[in-house]
Every structure is written in structure tokens, then in C-alpha cells.
Image (cartoon, rainbow, N blue to C red; front, side, top):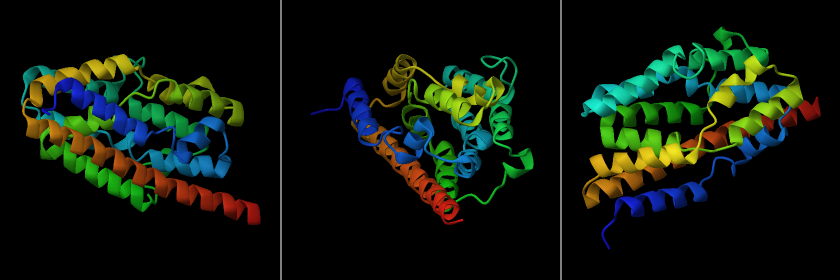
Length: 238
């Protein structure tokens, strides 16, 4: 049976159910407050490998985008990330994350090039590559996999950080602002597939890319989780 746009979207939903972000113990621990202070600081540094380097992802995607309307939309995403003037009161998204790091007692110079675990390095290499390889694969990895909505999760993390560590609103603004809704992403996904994935091979490539992106995200989560758990074991022994 030929894949339709709706069929692809339905399969993407299934893939996310198979590999949920909240289902991973790394994020369950964040939302439920099971990580201690040192573990949470480590996770903060490692997760920074994404938001503090977004220009390598959005920027590449903008350059290779073949359509003026989509290029404008991606430019708006990059502009918001770099300036925060559309959604976050003029606070750039890298600054939002640095404010979170500050709340966790970490300085900017400790955030941009920490000793990233291998999972983070692998993710950065893959995401940078896929966002410069082809627009269809890059935008599928970005918007249908990496940016797929997790409504309510980031809000839960923000509130737990405030409850557990006494972080103020400025320190958790990164998490609050990045909480998003399913409907917006579903609409973007439908438009994307209708315009850029018009053949059976292209639709199968989208599914392959989404699965690959989520697999490598979970590889990264696994590695961060392993190292954060080891920090907890060391603390217990001490």
C-alpha cells in the first residue's frame, strides 16, 4: 500500500511512542527530581550541547532550504534562537540556557566546551551533518523528530527544578519557553510532507530519518544517564 501523508504522520507518532523522551530514565529523573545537585549540574552541561550550538543545525538547514517560504520560516526560527525577540522578550535562547546554567552554579566558560560524553559528540556530529546533507532529511530530523512536541514535560521539569533546588523564574525560563503543543508541530509536519515528500521513496526516507534521529537521541540520553548515574554512585560512596 502506498504511503500517504497521513500514513507517514501516523507512523511518526508510533515511532515517538516507541522511543519517548519522557519514557527515558534521564528525563524521568529530571521531571521527578531524582537527580541530586551534582548529577543535575552534569546533565545541564551535557544537554547544553544542543541549545548552545543550535546555529550549527538551524544555520545549515537555512542555507540548503530550496523554498523561499520555508527559508523565511527557518530564518525566523534562527532569529528567535539568536535574539529572542519574537517569543522570549529579547533574551536569546542560548542566554536562556546560560541563565539556567547560572542557576545551577555553572559559569558560561564551563558550558560551551565541557568534556562532553561520547553520546553528545555523536549527536552533534549527526545533527550537523543531516542538517547540511539534504533539506528533506534535515527538516525531518529537526521538526518531525528533534522538535516534536512533549507538551507539559518541560513545564514539569521547570517546576521540579524550582521545588528541588530553589531556582528562580529566570533560571527556569528556558524550560518554560520551550514547552510546546502537539497541534503546531502536526500542522508543520503535514505541510512539510505535502510539499517536499511527494514520492513513495521520499516518504520512506522521512520515516528512516525520524527513526534514525530518535535512535541517536536515545544513544545520547543513554550515555548521559550512564555518567550521571556514576556520579550518584560516587556521591553515595563518599
